[in-house]
Length: 366
Image (cartoon, rainbow, N blue to C red; front, side, top):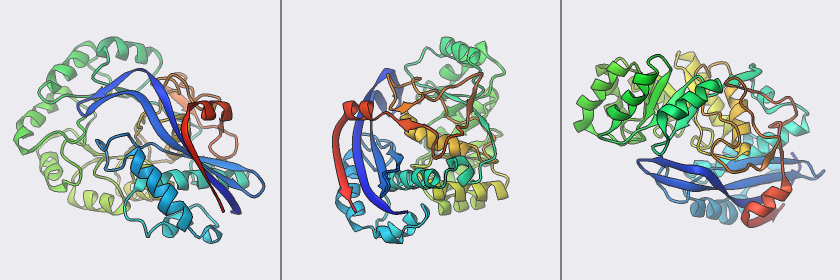
């Protein structure tokens, strides 16, 4: 791939409105943007959408920056990387740190697709030209009015962040106004064995799914609850690798899987998970993390694969962010997003915005 330079930029973008879950509140979004440049000056982009604190995964901005700058980038044998999937083996000496790794692999995929003058979607076997968009509503949202607004925009799936003890109040407020819309909740692992009766009562609301009711890695409790309820369970934080999916499907711990490229370590692993779920008739959808357009573009390519049958977290560029670093912006029209036709991720990065929004930068020359 003739890699010449890799640059890291820590970018911070204010949010249009606070984004709240039971785990905390975001008022700005900081991520690491990775740029991989070849010897001809062509550049591919990836994103490390970690959070500042370890409330979602153990990784943080600080740990990801350290792993990339001090351990990963200086140690990789770049001459051995002739395809983006080679990065998985090249970085296997680092245990964990999937999000940090995913940013590098994502930039490699974008660069590789650009070098071959093909779209990233085509490179990974995507067949869809458009994908359907789903919306996430935080605890700070005015739920009914926001759902009404999003319905007008054509969104076809609605995910509610819920608070323990108020889940039925939150769900019913939307269900009373909109009894038939595809509605799901995201618990972010906040429930325990003592909450089984509460979770069983949620069957009455005809939810599309309950996402990650129990803590990450608890296959047994998810299996037990899935046997008790008609509502499909979806795993999110539990799925960090292909082997996690094999275990979840084998134990019948869920009926749906949320695939996040960054959470599973990169696009190569995400495609592998998609293929396995498709073989076992487990529908998948693409989750989001209040990311910039770089991640959104990678997510669009992933969602073009055939088993992504549920609308993903694929909102327009400024649904949450005050501004984005890509051009043009990701647009949602009639609840759908068009897969870009330009090579790579199909978007360019606005270097002026990237520089203005960057708090620190570092470059590794090969």
